[in-house]
Amino acid sequence: MIDLAKLDEHRELFGFFAGQLVYPDKETFAWIRESGEEVLPSTVIEPVTNYREQMLALSMEEIEELYVDTFDFEKSSTLYMTFFKYEDSKDRGQLLTSLKAVYEMFGMEMIDRELPDFLPLMLEFLSAAEWLGHPHSETGMFTVLTILEDGTFQLMKSLEKKGNPYYELIKALRETFKLCLSQEVKVHESV
Image (cartoon, rainbow, N blue to C red; front, side, top):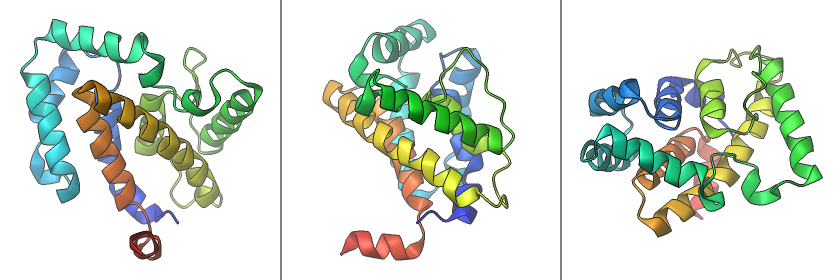
């Protein structure tokens, strides 16, 4: 079960992840440099630090090239979270429509140039949308987080095989998701 209060506590962190997963620019690079450990949950510090160290060893041009090579030319590491499971099937289209409806229900207007399962967009939604206190928060967030859980698992495994620095970032993101589970789920998972 999702703990909406805990999910809300991590809005800023979801914004950080969203910023790191869009096409890199100088602002992204500055954000890597400035991300302070004092605001990170303890389970996220190590992978974010590893990611930061690997990225800071690269030039801006190398980061741009890494991003394009990783996310634009590899189906196995796409940023479209439903693609791993559904590719271009009819089921994916229906899921994308449902996801767009969730965004709109919480006041986020979709821009047509991006599909609703684009990981940075989904994380920006968690960061900025007004979902807390909404009567359909639980159902809507369950939809979003289920898609994120499935997609980021596949993405993380692909990046790990390649030894890609973005692996550490996705690992940190998944650790953040775990922090947003209610206590009874955590106890159940450890049994």
